[in-house]
Image (cartoon, rainbow, N blue to C red; front, side):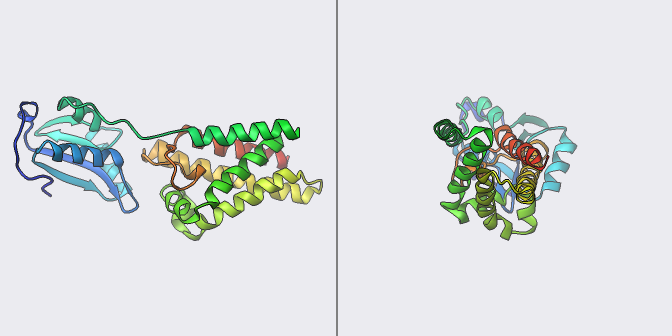
Length: 249
């Protein structure tokens, strides 16, 4: 598919010929770096072929065939230029940086820590407060959260209703931790729910980030966040899983 009409070509782009752009464009997620590369080619009036990769299998097959770890990839004839940043450098353009922030995560856990100190609630109190605060952010706009969550949560992709239920379940887990139930059965129930949510979260985040290498925002602080899905998201789920395991023990 032709990506750009012919137009004035600068000296920086004169050496580019038969340009092809391969980018991930899944039904529920278009790679932002692929879109940046597409826009950059259009802005410089460089004729190119746009080859969107429409499924995870197609993305993996492309990476295996070309021996690359990420997409997008730009080719000029038989030469592989590389990704978006490589293309920007080739064109003498300063590459855009990712629009990300970890401020919401820092604020949530800092607030939880201060509340824990004031209340003398201990480690379990800190985790309970943090979980409740995270659930509150999701509950402020459940549809937006669900849309973002389904992009990487494996259970939600099979059962979409789960994305809408998750914030409420997370709130119940946080409240259960804060109750510090003396009844063994209730404590184990809360612990099992926390461990299950944590493990499912680790698997989903791990697959999206380390296997599929998706550039997504984390829904952990709500659906409209600019917090990237990555190590921090994985660590949050790991802590919840460990807390649940401790309650079960």
